[in-house]
Image (cartoon, rainbow, N blue to C red; front, side, top):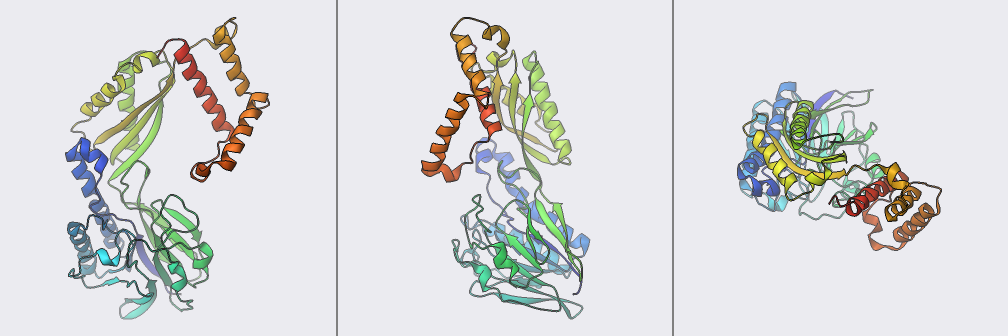
Length: 421
């Protein structure tokens, strides 16, 4: 097998709107929208810098719902840069950018090879006039393909590396729509050396070799559910060895959700300064990228009552945003939630001869996994998960999660009974 190097990316979603934040801050929304294009430029820069043989793009280049010609033109700008460096680009279309959503008159640059939707096509990859790999692929003709397109790929046995491009949902991944569903076994029987997949926005390697089956994930996150680093894969295929698959971050803006324990905090000023310090630490850990952050304040604190009054949390949120104005990289504290509890001397309350002592006793029993109350709760939940139609959409609660919920419920109950709300 010959040796080749390539960049594998997918789910670029160029020019995709960030509607929630845009409504609050139009200027920030514009920057967010532009970040998807900047992330693609980072991919182009990487390919040129690494002098790869080709770039593979596995669908969802833009969102056809907007029919954004601007996104298509920006994408073509990047392809022109690659073509001018002699780097070939191979493209399949997915559910967000099916063939029927592209401009019919848009001309592709030289060295760009789009795949059709009516069949699996093979494009040879050449270096100095010699074929060094065969690239197979098929595009979506429309946005809601439910057919298993993997089965259309031929079984191949070549002396050069064979790579398959496909936009697909593998297995029972409920986080994404089941477009062109297939299995790992379906892909493993086609004779490919590497499957360059798209559709799943989290970087995932389902198999490392024979064949490698890889989702690079999206190149730029667009909402808090896509937290963590996003990017593409830099891959080397060489005879006799497993593929070398490196994940390379390309994102401009990163989402992060975190918690901050404010136990023993004395003043609101302490809370504000600690929130800002926490945000700064997050940005440092991100490599000084722009950050959209969600924080949850936790802990048992004397500030619990004050924090729950009026719009205190909203005022803190606005103050932090104001303090970060003009900062580069910028920080946007998107959401601030309270999961604190008040401070109570539980031992003293337990020793009382009153209703509150009885309530604490009930919660103490709930924290005992061998108690009758615990067994009753487990029995009730078992019936719920066996009969309720919505059971497939939520995970069963673990013992640890149930104990945590019991502790949270105790805190909320005491808040009400002790008059701290």
